[in-house]
Structures are given as structure tokens and as C-alpha cells.
Length: 103
Image (cartoon, rainbow, N blue to C red; front, side, top):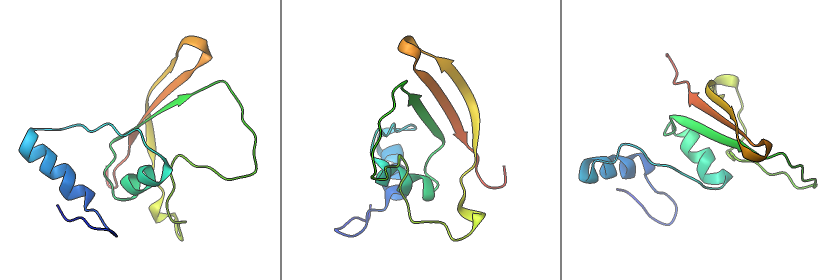
């Protein structure tokens, strides 16, 4: 796996986990930056969102998926809903499949 101060080859790291330990699925609960990198690198198969019935105001922009701004629509990541369910306390659980280009 190539890594260093400026770059980590996540694709190679995931492949090494699979080859060495048989890992097929990695769950990532992280901030917007890693989420954005994984999505833009095509390393995400499913997005799971838990919506809480609470509103929090503010003036600073926050995002669950941070990545450089797109300059064309080509980088838009399409999702397909595979599950929607209501949970305790009026929480809503949404699961989306990431639609890979050409599928």
C-alpha cells in the first residue's frame, strides 16, 4: 500500500485487506472529507443515512460528503434507493446503492 504524508492509496489498502484477511465489506463512519474521497474514488457501494427529527441552525456550511466542487455534471454520483424505514423516535433510515457508471 502506498502511503505518506500527502497521499494514501485507499484502493490498494482495501485490496490488501481483502487478499490478506478476506475482508469483503468495510463500514466507514467518518466525517465528510473521507466520505467525499471514498465516493469520488469509486470505493463506495452503499450509502446509509440515519435522519434524526431535529433541526440545528447555524451559518457555517457542513457536509456529510466533502470534495472539490464539480466543474461538469460528469462527476455527479447517482444513488438508487434500496431501503427506507421508520425507526424508534421518528428516525428514518435510508439506504442507497451507488449506481456505477454504465450499470
